[in-house]
Image (tube, rainbow, N blue to C red; front, top):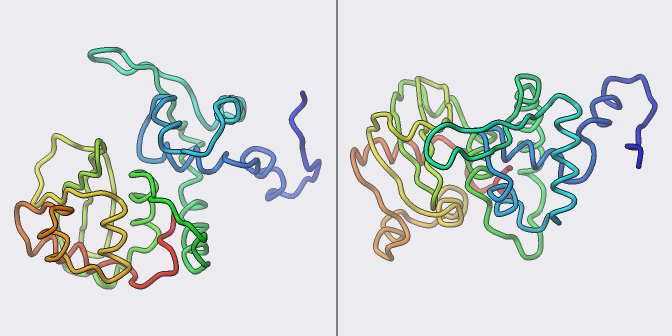
Length: 220
């Protein structure tokens, strides 16, 4: 079946021809920080039907926004990754995340996927709170590991599991959401075993303080 189009010469309409279908931008969100296997995407996008995910990936490939690749190393996993053109969508997604963070939560909100949470950090970062802060924090969210880099008012979230870190935070997206945006004290989360902190605790305190507080919903 032919893909539907707005048949409108406006740049917004032409962009929506590529990524305006349901789930397309959420697939892009899950690939922003690095390649993933099909099964990883299925696990992160819990409500997507397999045939829809397959079609969205085909659409992104056809539009030059994503491509298939084979990772080196044990297992030689086949993955999907964004192309350079696909990565140009990052500021679009962050702007949507900032807009959406001020909207009401769903009636029964589900926990964010690790990648959705990592992208949420980028959307609600407050650079003025990070002035003079330089730190590298390992963020372990289940099986996913990220490096959060604070550099004097700038923030980056990357996958560099082998790099050196000043501190490590190990928890779940749900617990960290409550810590950052819903008033859960870190000491309480640690005492319950839901939060693990190692390394320089002052770095962790700085990290917890550089994001917008008390949102209706964390963006992403």
